[in-house]
Each structure stands twice: as structure tokens, then as C-alpha cells.
View 1 (cartoon, rainbow, N blue to C red):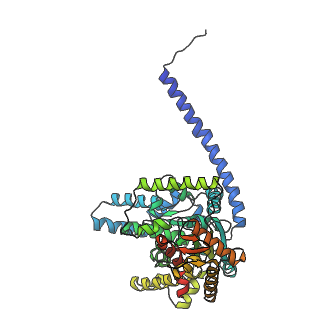
View 2: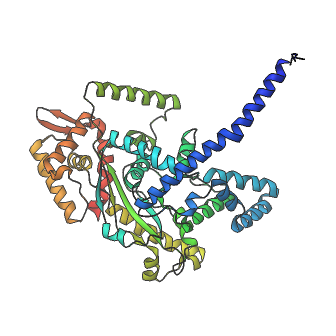
Length: 470
């Protein structure tokens, strides 16, 4: 006997939702995870064949596992107990803070995002903005580096594009992990940077609990062979000059470094320079106390207007890329050899003595970075106009003075990048960039500095000023 059964609408909807949920979790999501795991394994196999330094197991460990390892690390727990007593807070509250710091710091490296999406973005952005060049690489020095070493790229910090540029130039050799400032902790940028291997650092934090969690993560990553990139100055150069080194992250790495056992720790000095730094004017405004700081709305408005102007120039074919961006890779510095040469074991020193030794090493590393900072066309031209800001120069005079500067720099073993190996072309490119930005004014075949833009000229000349002082 056939019949019909009527069900209330809410029950039908609930049953459909439960069926969809079961289908999603039992069939669809496992299939998606299987697909991406399979693709990731294929990508890993190909990548390991071409990388100079293979991806270490620590970098491929699940983020949750690293966080748990960090939270319940013996030294972290000791600091947690001490912090709870000194601040008179419960163990549970202190543990919540530790978990919060660990989640904030630890990256969630994704192979596909780094080597597929990240590589595409970094290549596209770098080549769209600049003529990207590698000026110098100490290939012989790199061949001597033990593949099992923990490698750290020590860089000068000219622009926030530094992250993108170095990632693009090294993607065929290593997978980098960057220390990223709090400025990038906004959605969705922080999620993307974590997937690319970036770990977030609170600059100048005085919280001992946070410092201990950060210290232990850096030590775990270093011991695990993660290739890292560190801006030794700690922040962007505001006036164009090389800054004084900060020893925080460097000290964390060296506290547990054993020169006799385990991995060697190798620092690679990297010098970066640009014909145009995107943040040049904002950096100068940041150190001018008389200038009113712009609101977020003003910053967005300025960026939007600049973008519209760029699009208009590109449509009219009057837009040029921002000149050259050049990166030099200096001679790797082995800490195993350094400690033997200087008869020092950082892990066995008292704090005060260790800090002195680390500061000395930081100065040596900063000097090594300074030596490999590239000399590119715009800083050369800027240096000429700053010799006498009150007069006009003919093109012939500019060429003669630039030639003298290049000769002087090469005598000091500076790494001068000459595009197309043509000095006249290098001068033409640098002069054109400054004229298009109205930093240099052209009047009847003579050129003079714009009196309203002397700070910008000085900013670019400062990027190579240390090379004349050596």
C-alpha cells in the first residue's frame, strides 16, 4: 500500500545540511587534501633537485607542532614561571600569553605558495618596477659552504621591496625565511607572508616572556637549518645611509651555537641599492620634526593618485621603470672559522662579555655588507650635483665628474654597476631618472639641482657615501 509522508520544512533543511556536511568532510575535503599533498610532494621532489640548500625538515614541519614545541620548551617554561612570580599573575594567564606569542611568531610555510605563487608575484613585481640585476656573487665562496650549514643572509635595508627582490633572486637556490616587522600584521598580508615563511617580530619589545619565545624560535629555526634573511640595521634607512647594526637576533643565534658540533652557522653579506626607492620621500618626512605626519586617509589618497598617474603615463608610453635595482652577494663568513680565528665560544661566555663580542661581530658584518653595496647610476649623479648645488653643469662636465668618481670608487674596490658596460649610458640613465622626477632641472643644455629637492639628492648620495670614507 503506497502512501505519502509529509515532513516539516525545518526538518528537511536540517537533513539536507547534515548530508551536505557529511559529504564535505567525508569525501570532498579528504579528496582536496589528497590532491594538494600529491602536488606538494611532486613540487618538493623537483625543488630538492635544483636547490643549492635543500629544504630542511624543520621548515616542512607542521606549524601546530612547532608551536607546541615552542610553548612547552624548557627554557620558555622556566621564563614563564619566573614571569608569573614577578608579575603576580597565574600560570594559566602566562601560558595564554606564551601561546599568543608563539602563534604570532611561527610561520606556516607552504611549498606551493612559495615556489609557485610567491615566485610569480616577486618576479612580476620586481621586473615591472625595476631593471633587476645581480652585480656580483662570490661563487667560489659559496662552493665552500657546507650544504648542511645554517645560512643567514645579512642585508642592508633600503626598501620594503627588499623582501620581494631577494626572494625573487634566490628562489632557484634557497627558500628564505624573513623577519618581518609589525607593519605587515594586517589581513590578508600577514597570512600570505606566513605562508611564504616570514616570521613576525615586535621591534624593541621589553617583555621578557615575548623575548624568550622569539629567542627560542630563532634558535630552533637556526638549529634546524632554515635559511634566514635578516636586516642587521633592524629597520629601513631613513636618510639613505647605512645604519648601526642591531644585535638582538644575531645574539639569539649565537647563544646556542656550538663551534665544535652540529651545523655550522654561515653569514652571507648582501648589498642592495636602487636608482629609485619607493619610500624615499616618506622616509625623509619621517625624520623631519616640522612636517605634520599624514593620516591613513592621506596616505591612501596619495597612493591612489600616484597609481592613477602611473597608469596614465603607461597608456601614453611615457612611463619608465624606476631604473636599476642591483644586488651583490659577498663572501660567506663561517662562524666555525670565525670562532677559531678569534678564540671565542659565544655559548660559554658571560652575558656582558658575550654582548661585547657579538657587537664586534655585528660591526664586522655591517662593514662586510657596506663593502658589497652596489654603486648604481642615480647615487653617482646625485653625488656630482651635491659637489656644488649653486651652479649648472653641462653634460660633458657631468660625464667627466662621474668618470672621476667611478675611478675613485674602483680604486677603493667598490662594486660599481655599469649598465651594458657603457659608462655614458649609465650617466644617461641616472640623469634621465632625476630629470623626470624634477630633482634635477634642465635649462638650455645645462643641468642644475632643484633647490627644493636637495634632501632627496642627499638621500641617494648617502647610499654610497660610506664607500668614499673607507
